Length: 218
Image 1: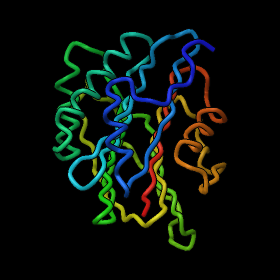
Image 2 (image 1 turned 60 degrees about the vertical axis):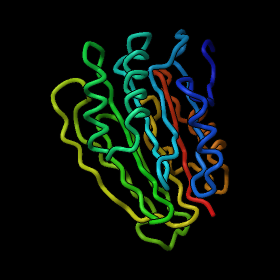
Image 3 (image 1 turned 90 degrees about the horizontal axis):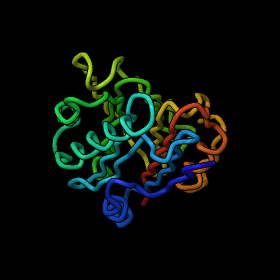
């Protein structure tokens, strides 16, 4: 398959290195372009911000170079303005996409000291929080994204906050991944193993695909 599996962010390797030294949030991703394409329109950001970690998954509409250009512009805006609230980051992305294709987007800010996560989604982005303690109900929380996309009509996203416990796993993915992947996961696996498994077993095959996995660890 051309343009094979990618595990490192192409926009800036430094982001992944910063996340790697964070002893509270462990994160990894897998990214696969549409067969026949050399560049993915799905990108992600993993960045230490303050005492927490910002996660972002961006999916440029369609595929190919124009989708990739839009995704790079949005990721660049998230990176430059990463200290701002999630709602403001949506506006920053919209401003960066003038003259480009739109994107759909999933964002999460994980604060391990406060043991909370704030997240939002716009468009067909998947997100799920899986509890390490199955006795902690609900054992699974699914992100409910707002309709639309960034770059079209103004989006009015809703930020939701949920508590985190040690060992909880957060997954954000583009729509190149089929629904229902959460039921098949082995949560004792590492974030990288989970990301690789999801993209190998639940790939639609008709679009770019990206899976980002993060875990709250001691």
